[in-house]
Length: 189
Image 1: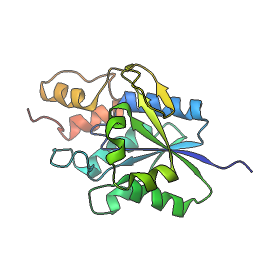
Image 2: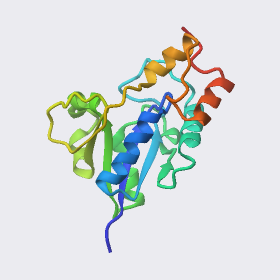
Image 3: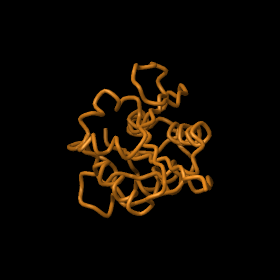
Image 4: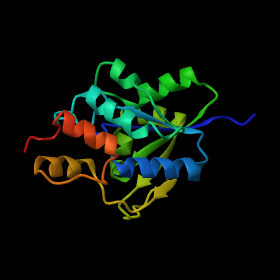
């Protein structure tokens, strides 16, 4: 029996956008994954001190964004633990829950340079295969498998566009746009 192959896609998803979804779908196809787990962070250890939308609102956006993709799954385990959300804690919990599964940890290209500073990096790297999601086209040198697609969409740009009253249509799924509008997220300048 073939071992299950699961992608782990963690992050603040503040907000989740079409670039996240496109790259997760590419990862399923290129890595032959059974599914991708989207795991919103309660608070990223690399973004402490930054203001984010409420974790439950960010989770609502992820749920809305992935609802029509059967191989995308939401896991809220990081919201059930006190912050910050360390990847090693999440991966150890997943291994305990699914010991026969092979895990692929999807990271943005911007995280590669500081990856070795992640909490208990050596333990983490023995439990997962890191896969870099490169949407910049920069082709940074590293030894990790890479999913490349040039996508010029970022959560910070989306937040800034909302704050300036500009459209985010086509940058986020319509259901995410509705949540942002309904709850007046990212209105601060």
